[in-house]
Length: 345
Image 1 (cartoon, rainbow, N blue to C red):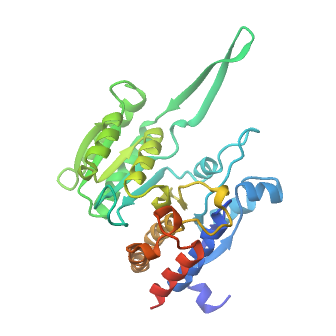
Image 2 (cartoon, one colour; image 1 turned 90 degrees about the vertical axis):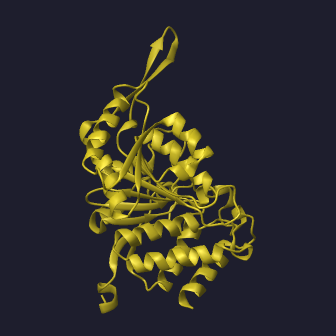
């Protein structure tokens, strides 16, 4: 190992499926232009891994993340049917990645909403996503009734609320909004609301706090998104609202995500693998690049993160720098070229 590689931060890189390898290639080139801060361990997961080795989430990939504690991954495909569990959910459970962070920031001017800058913090391990489901047969119908159990714990609710308020203080955000459905789900989300209120009391005078019922929050995000700053919610509600928030700034092609636990963190583009455009050079790498900026922040490389975001902003500021999904004609690879030229210039 060279002196230069010893100074790099070990990290796992998962190309993923569909458009994943194309956008990961752009990320690698852009990070080289940033000074190559990471020593990548390339590993497979998803449909490619299943086809190559018979396992959606190979042990070698899990071992790599255990070793590095840090991963950047492209979109993964979980086959429909056949009893396969979501690879993303398995990764969150395997490394107890309890906090999902989804920032949304206006980059492209002239859209329906200007100057959006908000962050959703979603509990990542509890709620209905625990997957405790079963059918109840009636007469000759084995699937006559479907039942699911949602689980929120005091400890899990406290942990995610604490994370959200700490995030707000650390990033100089002004307000945290607690989103719930305690008017109907009085136990399941009532526990979350009660615990989040308790946590909020410890931040009095430092961070403003308010509350919203989830359906009202969804409406107000459309009518007046600027009233929100940091939103914290349970797993299912956070999943839905985070995609809605992405729609305020151009869609999932502009939506990065961070999954953070005590011992590991995995950063991702939250859009799908888009097999219909794979290999055509139409994919937008922005979401994965912005996820890379979150990873740089997490690693304490704030200057590199700021340089990367500034380069993305500058390239997307004009039509000549936009990919097909954003109304432009720039290819995936050419978008990477524009970024590397700006970073090296």
